[in-house]
Length: 261
Image (cartoon, rainbow, N blue to C red):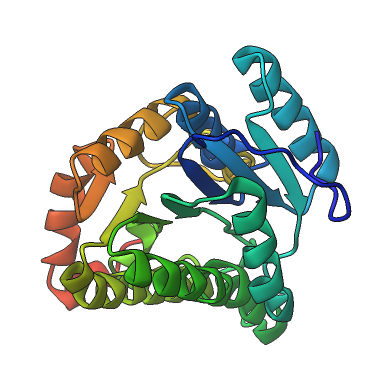
């Protein structure tokens, strides 16, 4: 069910808390949108694929028995659209308490391939889109003196591997950006959570051979919800990825550069 720009929305006297999920059409984003709706949130869902968004909104609204989900078709690389669309969403929901940036792409890169256009697109979606949207959320939440920002980064950003330089760089940049937001906004009572999933069974991972077991999106969504409730700052999911990355981060460079992943 798509929220139309010219269609007025009737709001209840005591509105439900609002959540925004950017990158909600499938995978972790779709699972988290459903989890937030189950926990009593109105959810604004953004993605490029309108059909997927409408299908997910219909599912959430049918389960809730009321209008709980709103769809907004959006390409996160269209940065100039963000301020006006953010205000539109705020008007529709009446309030925003949780803002999640989940959009991401993983372009296939051959070992001897260096394609700037592909890398530029990877950085635009995984990093710059997140900055465009979360800057808007940061301004609102800082004025409110509360709120939760959630950024879905990746274990891939913890160290520069040989497999996909643009993706690793974009996720590393996003993690650092989130840390900077946290260090700024914590002074205003705003919570910022960086989520670093390992392998997850999503469309992004189709054709990618994982070195470790892949998680289900629903399990990741539950873990993120617990992280929001507990106001965690950084979380790996599943939890055992912390141990794996702790070892990888501390491997000497002359050993790490010989690895193939």
